[in-house]
Each structure stands twice: as structure tokens, then as C-alpha cells.
Image 1: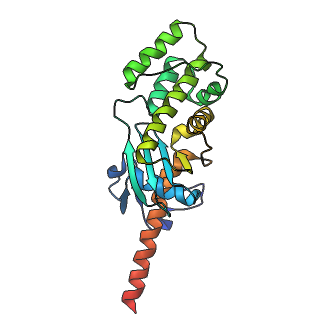
Image 2: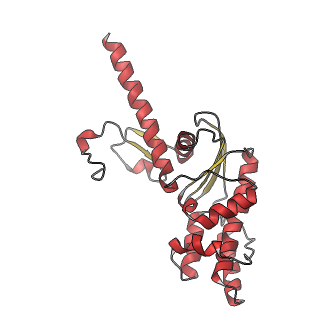
Image 3: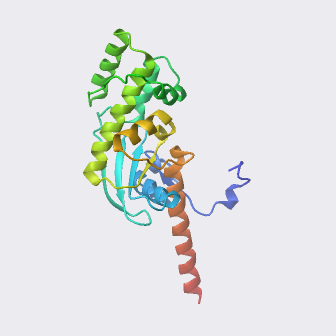
Length: 222
């Protein structure tokens, strides 16, 4: 707020989203991650018909109608090695910074297969690749290809569309973006700050509610 030169008095409506959305007692509206991601993706890229959201805890494929209305969605299994937290744990084990993962993945010459859908077993595969002397680049390249493969499965379950928007923190990793595009066989939309797309969606929905409330108030006064 300070960067935008705003104060508390400038805030007219508060919407929350994400896993902690119920932990804000002064909220006016709570929005699911699915609804907020779909709304923002359609706002940023109006042609969006499918959204892939890979965050820390889960991966979601969302089929959307014009304007960002959710038609259908699928979420990965809770144990699946298909979310950002797995990438973070892998980076920690490989002793690299999370911000390095995307660039290292781009340099992979022979991405190593990570086939386990369980995060614990997938980590064991990573350990085996390290023990076999595989370069870090090939291991993280394999991690991204594994995530992309699981994402394709989810997108097919909702009906893969020709314009996909990729959101969530993992979308910041260029290696993941390229692995996804290779797996899907088409380019994907990625915004400049994909980790904040959900927040944007919540803000757009808050604005809509506020405008509706103002319109109803004006109508009642006439």
C-alpha cells in the first residue's frame, strides 16, 4: 500500500484468497484460489480457456468460459510430487537456490526421469540420480518435465484448450515454462508476476462486488 501511496482510509473493500483466506477476520469477501485464478487469467489474457495453477501446495487445471467463469476444475493428489513445495525441497537437497532452478533447467542436456507420483518416492529418485553422478541441470530438468507431464494429465481431464494461461509461483521458472510448452505442444500465457495472479483475481471480484453494492445503494436512494 505504501508503494501505491495508499492508506487504510483508501481501502473500500477487502477480498482474501488462498489457503489463509479465512484467517483475515476483517475481510468483506473470501474467494477460492480456483475462482480468483480463473478471473484474473481471463482479465490478463481474454482468450484464456484453460488455466494451469501450480502453487506451493497443489496443482490445479481449470476450464474457463469467456470472462473467467469456472466451468470445471481438477486438482492433483495431495501426496503428488506435482507442486511448488516439492521443487523447493528438491532445490534444498541439491543445495541450490530456488531462484536458480529455472535457469539450470534450461541448461539440461539429458533431463532425468522422475516417475514417482508420491513426493517421498520422487525425492528418493532424485537422491539416486545424484548418487549416479548426474549433473544438477539434468535433475532439475527432469523435475520440470515431470511436473509438466502431470499438468498435461490434469488439463486433459478438464478438456485441454488451445489457449492455456500458466499461473502460480512455479510459473516464474522459465525452465518450467519451456518444459510445459514442449509437453503441451503449444505456447502458454504467463504474466509478469504469475505468483500474484490469484490476488489480482480476488481484487477484481472485490471491485465487482463494490460496484454492485454502490449501484444498489444508488438505486435505493432514487
